[in-house]
Length: 135
Image 1 (cartoon, helix red, strand yellow):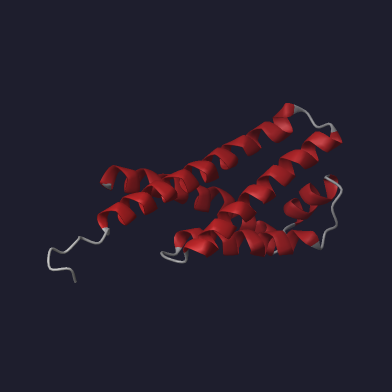
Image 2 (cartoon, rainbow, N blue to C red):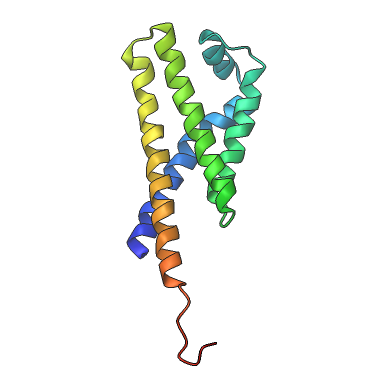
């Protein structure tokens, strides 16, 4: 379980760093973030909303407990990333513009997969022992 936990935190830490850094720029509507999103055809007012939503998702996967919230957070992060990739496809952008989005998608998928491996390991360790006395 120790190896699984280390791999989980590597994936999750990389997700938090990679997506968190960009989310801060989105949340404060940095000009680069606004330019990027508006070039894809979206309104500028969407930028801070996406930034705050991603930051909340990152916090949700970092905070222990709250398994249902984590599921929604992972889903939201994947929706955001797949939506960004689709937006590039729709514009006919070159692979150089959308291919880098695969890295955070893979990191989120790795974090999610190892989160479930940890949950399964914890659940198997906490199985109730059958008592011979019937209690």
